[in-house]
Amino acid sequence: MLRIAKITALLAASALALVGCANSDATGGTVTEGKLTIATGEPAYEPWVVDNKPESGEGFEAAVAYAVAEKLGYKKEDVKWVRETFEGSIAPGEKNWDLNIQQFSITEERKKAVDLSKPYYTTTQAVVAANSSSFASAKSLAELKGATIGVAVGTTSKEVVTKNIAPLKEAQVFNTLEDAVAALQAGNIDAVVTDLPGAFYVRDAQLEGDGVIIGQIDTADAKGDELAFVLPKDSALTAKVNTALEALAADGTLDRLAKKWFAEHGAPVLK
Image 1 (cartoon, one colour):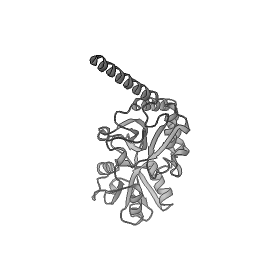
Image 2: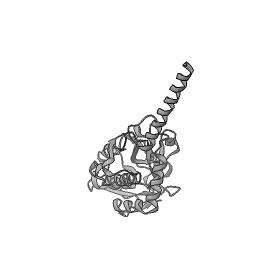
Image 3: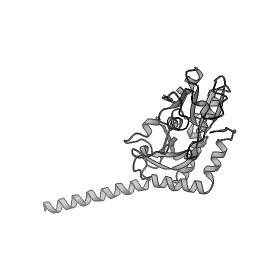
Image 4: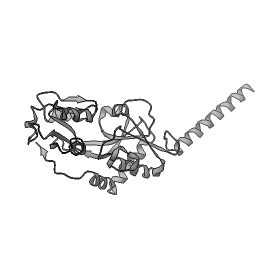
């Protein structure tokens, strides 16, 4: 009798486990049933997100996020936005979001802690200086060797600067791009290196006309940074997000969104 009771209990537990798996599959493995929770930075900069309001769908990454959500079967009202720091996003551990989009470059090191989707955009790095800087008129990477260059922590900008410019002074690392720009405005550094779309925002919005994009950095592989969604490690959504991105690339959506939000302003390529 005791043996039968144990077998019955085991069968019941197995049934509950199967029900749990079915529910998880039905919701796509999201943190909130029936909702897709997407994280971005605070603040989220243009042209990635307009007016720091990702829920508007305005801005390249906000638009891409909603396009992916639609491919996954979620309506706009079923998408929930939360904020997460850049470093916190790529750290191992549990997350309170399903997807995270804030210009994450694909690196092997990051893949150890989190899942990274296929790329949704490939960018280059660019150098921004104040108009008054003695380096504002530089025409080559060699002319930037004497510059004190600032970069944001957690990005690949420092690696690009070290490999391609090899400045005499090691690049200074700041907690945020905003901090680096503040140092540029104060005259504590000569230039800032960030992704090209971000460089346009620094020049036009943060420096308010008192800045210049010296040019793009001609990286050795000429591929630029591949930007991807971050997902929790071994997420059930990773393969689905990849399929969605493949479809959006194939039908031209990603290219159309890039052209819409990243206007070509003729930044020269520095060699």
